Image (cartoon, rainbow over all chains, first blue to last red; front, side):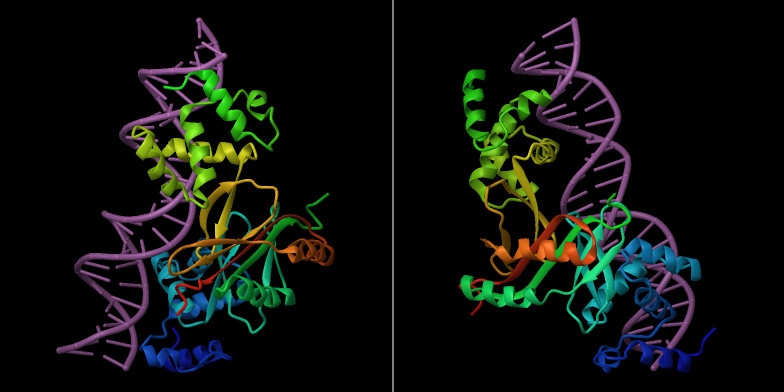
Length: 152
Length: 152
DNA sequence: ATGGGTGCAAAGACTTTGCACAGTT
DNA sequence: AACTGTGCAAAGTCTTTGCACCCAT
């Protein structure tokens, strides 16, 4: 069982590149569950809540699904991860918040998710904002289809 | 109570611009519930299942929510309407299928939905398809923000 | 008469919440 | 001691499904 200083150390790693004082500011605690979940999201690419739950349960069998949901909300609030809705079915996936803005392409057959960048999206945002008079806060862009292996 | 020839007439109107024989082909029946629902979707702009249910219930109080859901699925299968997921919350809305491909912009304050066209989206689709090797079947694009009246 | 359509209620998938207990500070 | 975080179970939201009855063909 890791002691608390080990945890702090690990959490510092987790916090690389994000606003450091968020945890202490909000009085949020660094728990094993949280470390585990963040770690799995970081490794796992694109996971939904249930996938994350099952993976985490392999390591901590006593972990509960509500802890997963609660902490996903927390991580989002803290800006550590993003929730993305992929494909026309709009399922929710989670991924670490990276510097590069990107969008998603999902294979309808095997479920593989590919990220792509889209410089046009920013242009689009300001163009649509100008023409509509809206102040635009968010953009949702994803595509779906069949990947090279599945499309034949 | 409208007789069946009236209903056929009305349904023909509904079918303007879509593949006409779909109903007869599939043996789908023209019912008052279906006429009402299609009519409300046509008038209503962007409705979700519950909004549609409540509007329809004002006219036919005995209508059930499952009929709404069942017929939304049906209309989608027949190509009469589109299901769109708007905003980062990904709520499902329904609208008549028009000729012009368009996307949606929703006000986070008043809920107003504005349609916009995006010639770039088609380009984007083929570009992403080329670069990724995917065969792309669907694209999901929407934005959210605050409309002119709400943004101050 | 036949077979699809509807209302009702129940079940499903996914997510949130209330509560008592456990672990940190 | 005070308070946050967790597990568990219950409740919530949105959608689908099973079944008996109804109605159009």
